[in-house]
Image (cartoon, rainbow, N blue to C red):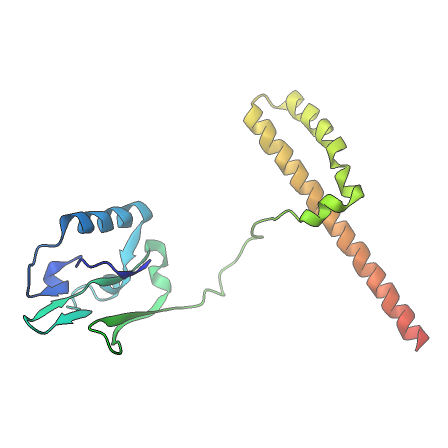
Length: 186
């Protein structure tokens, strides 16, 4: 989450001149969000004792750090670079943030998404017959309705994935067969 919060989080490091007491309601809201979502001010994490000012007023001289990139605490190690740079035609500076690519992470299978095209497939629609069987089996082996519901969803998902893989294999075999016929016809 990034932007102009109009409130310095650390008046000793992020403010020079003007009223040194931050607005309590804004400050409390930012702290609450940071606490609930486990967010950190990445600039302050990377530069814990550096004085930084993104906004400057010339008369009277007031310097404030009002802009932040608040990121998840467990992501701060992915930040390669954070900097404050001048911005064009404004009294604000900009905070830049560069994240490193995490390609070397091992990723799981991700989320399964139901393919709505399966609902037009008559072979797949026969799943309704299987639901009765799964429900009877669930009621025999399981005693909590919530667990039976999860059991049903698991079986429907497994059936859909198996059906879709079979259909993809059939489509691939048909495509290969047509390519072979085309090659022979040349």
